[in-house]
Amino acid sequence: MSYQVFVISGRLTRDPILRDVGQTQVANFSIATSRKYKDKNGELVEEVLFMDTAVWGTQAKSCAEYLSKGSQVLAQGYLKQEEYNDSSTGAPKSKIILQADKVVFMGSKKDDKDVQAPMPFGKTREHIENMNLDGQGELP
Image 1 (cartoon, rainbow, N blue to C red):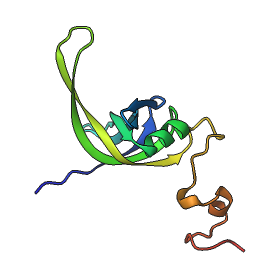
Image 2 (spheres, rainbow, N blue to C red):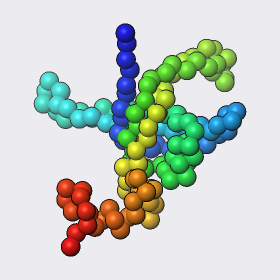
Image 3 (cartoon, one colour):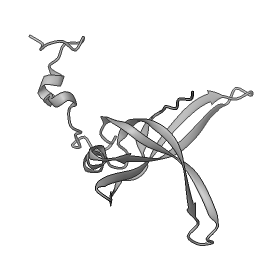
């Protein structure tokens, strides 16, 4: 038995591209994430990873509508190897992409406070802002 789950959190490197594929839609975008560590000399090193991501169906439409370059997301899914031919040389190539089953909107772009993602479970923004710290009920 084998099991695969991949989770990544980061910011979009470009606006999602929405395409119709048969009876459904797919949104493609790339997520940038980084990790910092100290090397053997004690110097701070930052590694950056860019993960091409595809999301399907109704989530694809939501991603294309509410996300843009710089938006912060958390995506969960499985890794898939895509094969294609290089457009300039015709040589066969492949790349690993994340087929996202779930995309969580973590916030708006750093520089755009007016972009607002839909609220979870049909809650209004005012309801979320007025919840007490344990997430239960309204503040007095």
